[in-house]
Length: 88
Image (tube, rainbow, N blue to C red):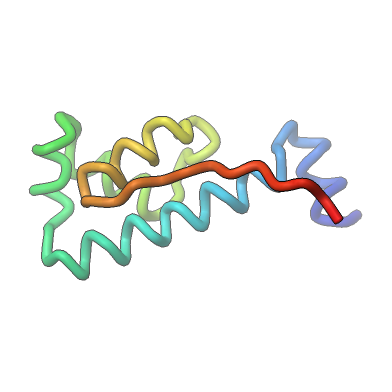
């Protein structure tokens, strides 16, 4: 069974999971580069340090929305744009 087939059988969108993984890695890198602890970021966002740790560890990320990830990135000083390009 391929990864795509497995994901489909589990009801997981592979492209969505990959993009979330990429955003989470960017969040981790940005937080560390700015020398911000998980606890400090959590306080800014109004969540627990444990929730930030879960997100960064990709635990339960199927329940983490893009809106949440974009919000975290905004708090870290990033702007995220979605650009549609014509294929081909």
